[in-house]
Length: 186
Image (cartoon, rainbow, N blue to C red; front, top):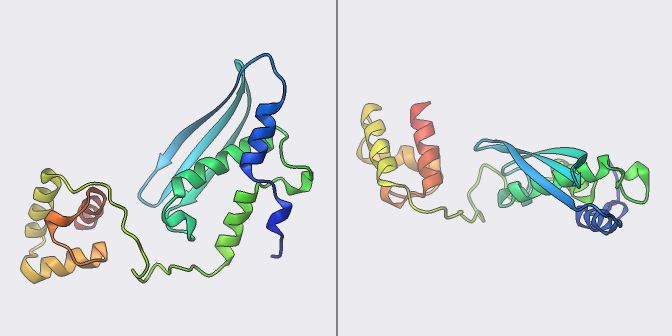
């Protein structure tokens, strides 16, 4: 599928045009996180003109799908939802056949391009620091490891396999601990 990204208008440009339309009533953009799992998120965006709901837009993004979603799938999803709401309100760009926003077409490009950070390797992946695991999480992990009959090197190997890096329980971030607990209770 060949397309030129320059033919598609960014969400920011569409939003600026909508906000610039003269109006007596205030304009608002409200976004709602409708669903979130470890793997994906879904946002709904609403465009309001005073007390009138003008349009809505929905978007879904998968964490790690393409380069941008390795670090910014929430922001990407929210922006896409706003873009859909703007398109539904008639702000689809100067060419009505180019209804998707540039951000949406980037998603298409990402889905067809080879992933620059393959999921099966941990090279070039910058860990996101979300704070260390709580004592409660660490104790629960230890309990689950014991119940699984894992200790010592076996436990270390299991942790490293799930997390993808060498670390001890007290070095886990909160999100890593959650992933480990999920794997241990599966």
